[in-house]
Amino acid sequence: MPGIRPFVKNDIPQVAELVSKVLHERQGPAPQTLQAHLDELFLQNPWIDPGIPSYVFEDSQSKLLGFFGVVPRQMSLRGKKIRLAFGSNFVLDPGSRATMAALQLVKAFLKGPQDVSITDSANESSRQLLRSLGFRVSPIYSLRWGRPLKPSQYALAGASKLKKSRSISAFATAVRPFCAIVDSVATKLSLSPFKQLEPKTVGEEIDVNGLLRCLESIPSKTWLLPEYNEASLRWIFSFIRARGAYGKLRAIAVKNEESKLVGWYVYGMADGRMGEVLQIGSDSLSVGKVLNYLFHDAWKCGLIGLHGRFEPQFMEELTRRSCFFMRQGSWTLVHSNNPEYIEPLLTGNAFFSRLEGEGVLRFGQNSTEPG
Image 1 (cartoon, one colour):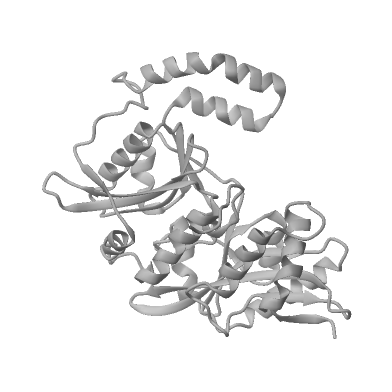
Image 2 (cartoon, helix red, strand yellow; image 1 turned 180 degrees about the vertical axis):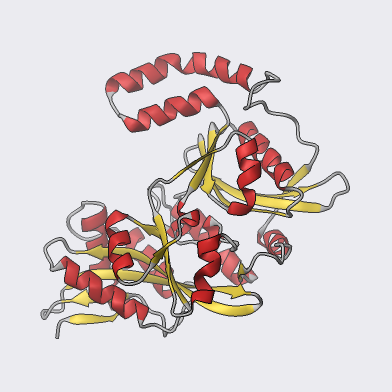
């Protein structure tokens, strides 16, 4: 009989082929790396919960026409542990009755035992569908911030993305040496908003255990907090590194002159030029110091700019440091039968970095098998 059922291991080849066909526009069998990705993400993740599976939609001939990947996560609300279920990798065969399949997949997802249903990677069509089923948009966590570190090279990179052509590429190559000179001046002039100052704080690289200790220092006034242990955090970092979407990861703890921890951050350098910030943490009095160290560190590593998820507790200091804000790409939407559970995600009272979302688990173009 056609309909919805939980995703199982034997479905992996068909789902991988569907993902490859729809998202990557490739015909034929999907690569083994994609199959391994689906297996590890949806069937082997450390939060696996039999009551919160991923789903497939199949026809009367048992052909899979739709897939809705689900990743459970754990957080705490004012000390009470709650279950979140991230809806991810929503893929439908373009030749199927897509609307009916989409509705059935999401309705099956919403019947799960999770306290909060959430996605932070919805496109415009998914946003409209989810809103019709009772999801609410979180405008706050749908925003991103950007910070040029080498402003002229950053602007040039942005222009190249807006319109890819041989003339733009040739122009970029020709002016790059001139941009390097302009950026060198911009980071040294006292009146420049992009001036780089040697931080008074000290940074040290940290491993998974070091990051766990940092996470334990999150200010208690944050209502919704992530729940990690060594195994789950180690799995996330291993997964991200193996898939290659964010390139080399850099995790730094920031300490003041008395060697006291004041904050930390994690960012990736996918192409060696633009950095993607996955997490920032800081006490309320030291946000500026942590951001200063982050920007200086990324600049010294050769990056031309940084991007990150908007987080309200950092807004004032980000604004003071010549960051800009944008609504670009994905939407964050939430659903719960208990309004109390989603209030922090609608009002900005959550510690909800990109490391807690599903975007960090995407399949990268430069993926390698785990070493």
